[in-house]
Structure formats: C-alpha cells, structure tokens
Length: 215
Image (tube, rainbow, N blue to C red):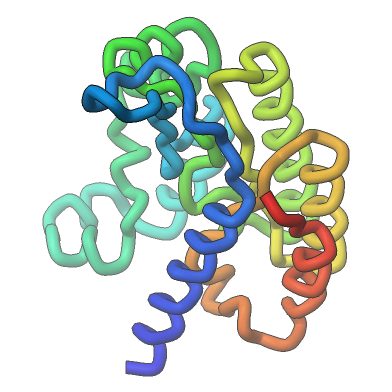
C-alpha cells in the first residue's frame, strides 16, 4: 500500500508542477460556445522519442527479458515489462513518435490541437546508467528545444532528467528552464526502484522552487 500511495503522490505532484508552469492565454483556433472567448486547446501529456532512444530501450529489454518468453505470458508483460511494445513498433508508428515537424503539426491540425506540451516518452532516460542517462538527457532536451524554437506557437517542452546523478539532474533542470525555455520537467515514476522522496533526490526539488514564478 505504501508503494501505491507513493506512486500516486509523485504522479499527482508531477501533474501539478507541469500545470503550474503553463500560462497560456485564452485565445487560438479551438471553437467555443457563442458568447465565450475562444481558448486554445493545449494537450499536456504528449510524447516524442528518437530512433536511437528506442534502440537503447529495445537493447535493454531484449537483454533483460527473452522476447519469446515474455510474449507467452500476457500478465508478465503488463506487470513487469510495461514498455515492451517499443520492441514491436512498426516503421510508420516509429516515424509518428519521432516526428517533431510537419507530420505532427498536420495531425494536430486534424484534431484541432493548438499546442502540444512535449516530453520524452516514458521511461525517458531513467533506465540507463548514470553517465549515459545524463548525456542523453541533454541531447534529447536540445532536440526538443530546437523543435520548439522552429514552432514556438505549437510546441512547448518539458525536460527529461537523469536522477541517477541528482546534482547533474538539478543542473539540467535549470539549464532547460532558463536556457532552453522549457516549462518544467518530467520524471517518470521510479528510477531503478528509487523514488523522489529519497533524500538524495532533494537537490532536484530544491532547485525547482526558485525556478517557479507566478503565471
């Protein structure tokens, strides 16, 4: 029960942090009832990946879980390998997930979505070794920042962090917000079985509060 409560708390805290950073004005393309001001349709839980990120994830899961064995046990898949579907994505699906340009914008327009708040697909970089995770977090944040710069009215970034190195993660959070213009960060559930309420991760939350400002 304690683990469930902790996960629920972290998920709720993450959503609250993301919401607190968003200060979009009520104007845009979405249709509204007569007599009301138009508002923008902003989708918060939107994700992207890269082909190399998916390759990294696949290599880890293929080493850890024999695919033939996992496929035979549906409950095992759901319980212990929640990201196994990445192993079976078809090229068109990979292309959609990795698209940070015209293809994604076209799909957004079809759904009358004005803004996507984008983050690296779960589990981010939290399953990698510390040095690799720290390096990749910076690389993927730079890629997302470039896309947001190209389409500033359509894309907003939430940084991926590598809590495996808490000090480096705190530094990357500050760089992402102050330097790249991101609105916050996403940390997925646990990092190798450890949660954000562990004291060694307090440096990350301690860096967060000075970055917050009224919207």
